[in-house]
Length: 181
Image (spheres, rainbow, N blue to C red):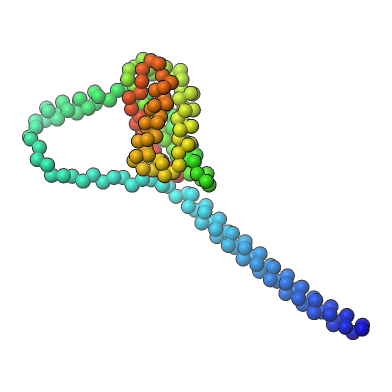
């Protein structure tokens, strides 16, 4: 009987060594695979997403000949149509997403109906910025990358801000910077 116990001990030692080697190999593979997956996920969040610029196609349409003074008058009318612009500081917000890794950097200017409105905007700057931040953070990447989505954001901001103002109204919103990362 003594001989049986001495033979069983080396067999158990060999199987435990083999088991230990298998566990170590599996752990090393898990660590390597985890590192590769983490590197791929981290690398994709650093890429900057920007909507491609639309390419305007020219159509050959015959127009009546106009003099340079007519063109100057049209250009001056277009400039006169734009009201007073009230620039706001840059907004940098996280976009609504599952991973929380996308952000939006926006600078915008408000087109005012009258000069007296700028005094009211100065007094309500903190509240206006808060409302704009709330609107922007409620948007997903898909909502702000399309032209229709940007237009919807613009309309939503204008409606909310106009509901808060009493000395006039905002006629338009102009994005001077729009970066998604």
